[in-house]
Image (cartoon, rainbow, N blue to C red):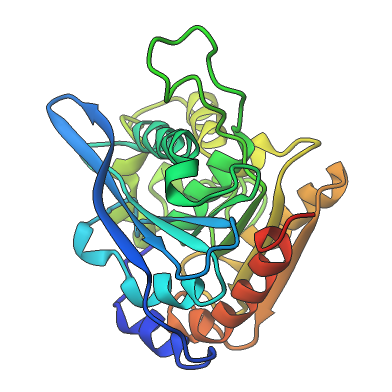
Amino acid sequence: MRRFPAFAFCVAALVLPSFAVAQERLRDQIYLKEGGAAFTLDVFKPKNPNGGAVIWFVSGGWVSRHDDINETLALALNQTGLTVVQVVHGSQPKYIITDIVKQVRRAVRFVRTNAASYGIDEKRMAVSGASAGGHLSLMVAGLGDDGNPNAKDPVERASSRLAAAAVFFPPTDFVNYGAKGNMPADGSDPKMAPFLPAFGPIKGLPPEQLKAKAAELSPITNVKKGFPAVLLIHGDKDSLVPLQQSEIFGKALEEVGSVHQLIVIPGGGHDPSTVIPGLPRMVTWLIQQIGRSK
């Protein structure tokens, strides 16, 4: 859930084929205005778009900054013909996870509403991210709906359904975190202390209420038949988000018959040691899922 230095993706891009620059970068597209704040995304359009789109949630520890938009990552995906959208959301502690999930779901609807102008096939949209960004990706994937046909805002009438999600080391189950019954929201793990403000006002909650809140914020709670295709990439030496989180999520997807793959990186931690070898495999998987019409 920690933030990653930009060099992680710069180095990872070196193992990909050489690529040309994006045809166009659309900066600061406002997808939501709320409470006096404007939330934006950047669109990276490839020279030869194939219609597929990857929506990357810029998030580490549920903190999101414009400075962390990664052009190298976008261009690596542009090289394959995929359009890339990098979404900046509100950061904790001002915004909690429930707020942030609403924001990024809105971003997905916004992209679909503007799909034609971005060169995107709305049926071939995927979400992606690392750590907290992976968590948000899986939350959005599981909460996809057809939109509100009665909404005055055309963006809210748009679907938030997705074709796929490709994520690095995501937290997936805050009720069983690393072991059955282990809940980081109870404050027992010092490593999780910087992230607990994102959970909202949980201090002093009775155990059952705390468990209910932890379940509400867990992507695994939303796994059901029809869940989009999922790629999970996780290192077996991750000391912050246990590999167990991806393993149990994969098992949950298997139980409902959803397409999924778990790639375990030997020796990989919650850092570039997992991202660098995993990124090319993520790109290949995304091309297979959304890079061409089926």
